[in-house]
Image 1: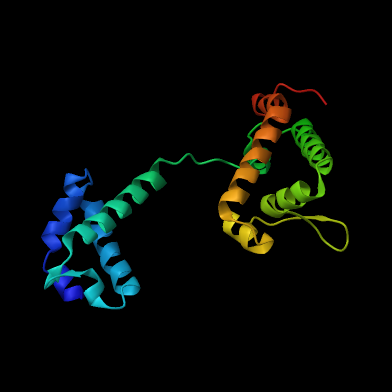
Image 2: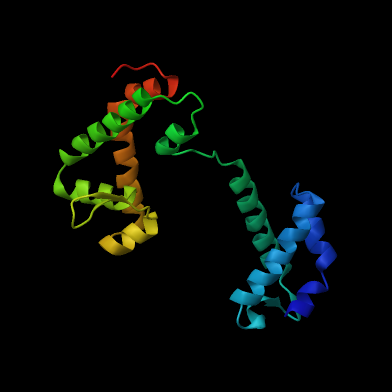
Length: 185
């Protein structure tokens, strides 16, 4: 199968170049396409059209790889609130105290929710209470939470989105004050 794909190597590069991909990235994506198809396609007849490679299928694979690469590069990179305290150059204890107070307020707010929402929030956002009654942070993906709760991924996504919205509405000013260093303890 790889031999049949490699016959059209120049075509694969041209396809990516026509999509707006630069040469170096195009070469990497074509190699990635070879690896993925080799790994995922068990029967080469699945990607054949008559006696040649189905070029439309390969085009769709390349396009998806390119769009994924562009999406990954364009995503915003967020820094967790906790790391902001560690990175701050003019760190003072009042920042730490304000941040801890803000986290406590958020935990108190979440504890007022019903049992299902509270459990799902804690499961996704990684707040786990161990046997010594200490908080342990452990991040989980939406898929892990959906699997653990035996619920649909879309349902979990919508609920988590709602939780984020609730927290944003409730604590937006406090979080902005924290980042602007405009707070009093």
